[in-house]
Length: 341
Image (cartoon, rainbow, N blue to C red; front, side):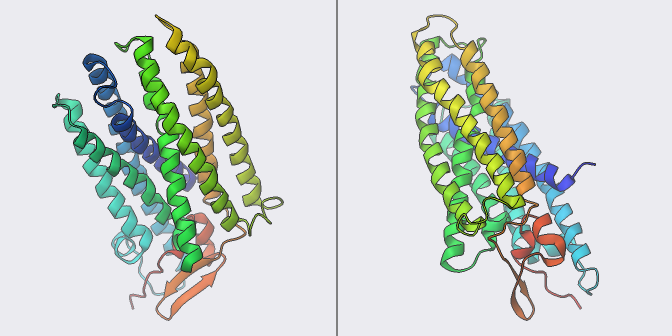
């Protein structure tokens, strides 16, 4: 049986990361002076097509996630007189408000990149970086839709900041792999040395992203597993270890690409990108598995996390309110719906 909440979360995270990472790739790797005009335009057009598809997937999966959250919340309040509608979820919950904001960002990005995809526009770095910043905002805003967004005090703010950095770094590295695959396609009008310059630029950016991923991941794990005490022996900890193992294998492919296959590309006069393409494709596949694990983690109660809800009588704390805390990745903890008696 399909778990639609896991599926919606996986598509939402994956499409947002691809959209944000692709927009950043265009601005930071494929900008002016970094590729011949013909090759740059071809690459930008292909990336824009990928961006539009990812944004449409983000819009659809975001709507499904919001609907499923409303259904879960309605079941959790079955014995209450509260009426749960999509409008009340959007206006009365943090998850709903953030979802509405993310929908507007995704819609704006779709229009922006569709215009550039449909008709050639003069080269504009301001347009590239505007798209990159909006794409980054689309990804980072996911931090307010999960466990990290429900914390309180300095610890809660620290966790939220770490999660936002984690998402941004994931978008730059993992989200940039699809544009990198497009860059390595033999049919693109670029020579191996020209590809090499852009690949090296992405590799440098990805290296910094990996460092931020590790540091922010340690902070997240600290908060979610009772200072690492529950990393082993709990369902959440076991899944997290699977995620870490996949991440380590990804690092192996990234190292292979950076130190062995990329220099070969720079030394080649023709071809030279096939082995690197397959290695990056394997790296991307592992990244998709990581996103799937993240989606499953969203339905697993972290041992080091207490949900915080807000009722008419004030804040309340509970491990799992009506089963919704784990089912909606902590969304219930963000703002509790007021009674509509």
